[in-house]
Length: 351
Image 1: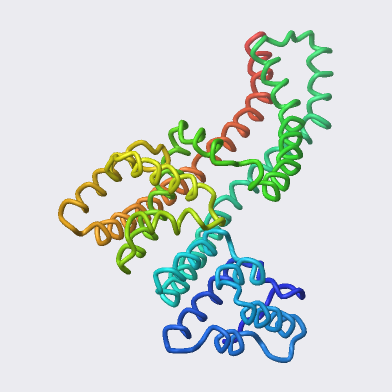
Image 2: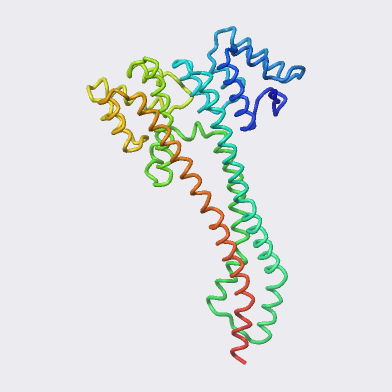
């Protein structure tokens, strides 16, 4: 029932903990609780970590710090969640937004666990195959080569290539793993400095990455933009609110471009068509919504469609991962089998 933190300093580092906390906080807010009352109720009493955390949160709240800043600094929430809360402070649906953000994190954690389950068995098979390669190279191959030399067997070019592959692959594989193990932590901790808006725009030129980048930005922008419009905020004011947040720099880039285009006298749908971070049909949705006076409703509907397509594409990719790894394992086993049997067959043919 109560929120148990995964570390002593008061931060929630596990995605499922963050998701549950957001859902429970949002549920209490929708039932009439204030944010301070919800925090006091959810954080476990009698523990040093939550006690200090509650004190810091209450102090920040009394100083007038925004809710999004509190979630970002004190609760260590992802930047996307902090951005959602920032927009919710302007359109008023804070409780509903927290529940939706919690569901998003829980679903994301579920997909992460599903991905790990999909790859763990194939990766285990790959490691076993590599261990077999190492054992063959260390123990069996020297004896076979001594036998072939004593019998005067001359290896073919294809056989030499196969043996070179078996002998070299484990070294190259573990070298790549070492490089990746060194690079990933660096990318994780410095991703905000390395991946600026220009780099993200450049990545939209690659087909698969382009889909996820465009679909993700279109979904998020359309959702928050629709909520602001539904609460009576004008288009220019909504874009100004989006521009003032600092949690997602790409949204700042989008809002600045749109505001600039509107000041130059271009219609909104034409401005959106010039941005490479949006899906191509987004400009049509904006134009259609403005013509029939249902821009906010259609943006929300289109946002839900984008999110559904993102989930569908992600699930499709998961289906291809396991067969691909199994195919590589099969090639490893075939290479080991042919490296042992081919010389024997060739020697038998020469008898």
